[in-house]
Length: 388
Image (cartoon, rainbow, N blue to C red):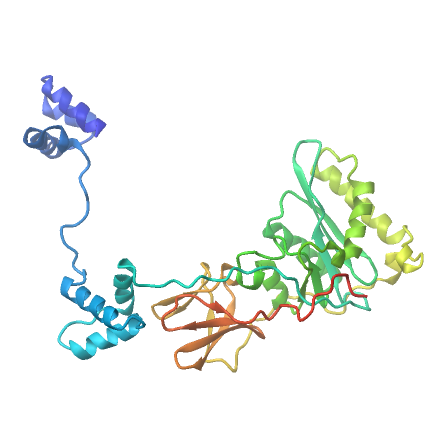
């Protein structure tokens, strides 16, 4: 409006239309249109006008909308698909609206009851001990600390449960999953694949808002055939061996902190060497972790695409975490973006969604999201202490 007001003001002061239009970067047709609107309606004409079209070509007729609301009032438990089928039977002469249109009408009029989705609450998983190297790895971020250059360092550590061997200690600038992916991939290439990995329920090992608390990192581990173990929230003693290593790491490699990441990583590398090859471990009867540890026989390789021979269809999840079936879009979770999942009709208009050997949840004809199945990673009984 300010530009139009200055334009009209300078016209009223006697300036010519053509040079004024060139200065404001508009055509003379537009200039005269603005001027005529001002002469007709005054200053109100200089306000922005609504760009809403006068009519919508695909707008549902008022009579059809009233009929939909009438059917819903008579049959309160009916959903959009049943109301649409009723319309087709009673009024075959009109073009039936889509199910989504009927649902939108009901939603606009406050006739859709939204079921509250139960928020996932971390409970931990069943914990099992390992009696051989690489049966179980433990991973965690040691608490962040500030370097001399005022940047925070987040050390990601991985140890072997049985031998206490420190596989890696990498100083990262954040806990983002992209950095964790690269650290774990390098560990897998150097030492092979473990049978399981035990972590806490924090990012990037778990995701509080995703299905069953899974994260992209956890989904990748499952694809590699690695079982996930999560400790119970507030029970760090369930990962006690790893936490004890963190105490030694804190004393010997972080106090005082180095000036930058390169200098700090050099101290971490030296600590790994001493911890594995020179420091006697009391829990191992005075042996070095390097005396007991041997790399895994399972070599790392990119995982093959999963197959679902007992499902009706295999579908790749979109980058926004949806399952697309024709025009339908069912919300799953972004942690499965790009993954191949299987769907199978288990009842009339009810489909089961599976990933690898895990049943994730169900969706039906009306719901646009996957409702969780019983947690396949939930604990039958979570111990309060780390099992031996």
